[in-house]
Length: 141
Image 1 (cartoon, rainbow, N blue to C red):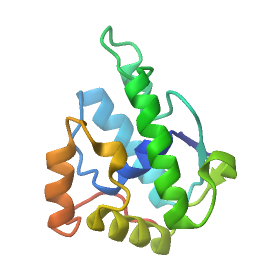
Image 2 (image 1 turned 135 degrees about the vertical axis):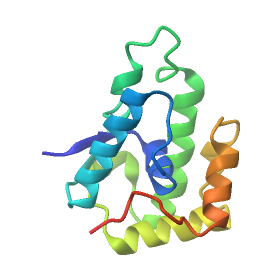
Image 3 (image 1 turned 180 degrees about the horizontal axis):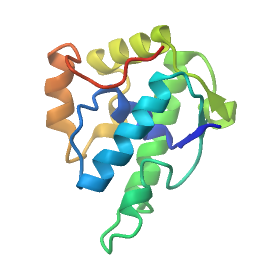
Image 4 (image 1 turned 90 degrees about the vertical axis):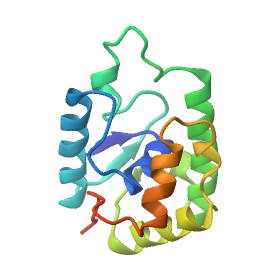
């Protein structure tokens, strides 16, 4: 199996501490991170992914907004540069320690933060990054 993931959620995973929009959202996110930590590959998608699922039933769901689609576009371009592969055509991707380390270093340096502009979690993620990603739940195999 594989986890469906939209490109900007690759950034969100880097700083995930167990906080989120709702209890169901956090439970679902925790399960996804456990699967990634166990080495399950991810499949890149456009539009709502496995992380979005608990939000899709919400009346104010933002998962299909044009601003979120733009976040995906920006994230895909910048992450592609860091990983040395085209996320638009990669289809499947496995996270390993080196990839997570490279992404976190680029995140700390601000090289892959364009998609974060205007995000309500921006300040929290910035603080987590400054703190060296302490206690983050993603710890790739």
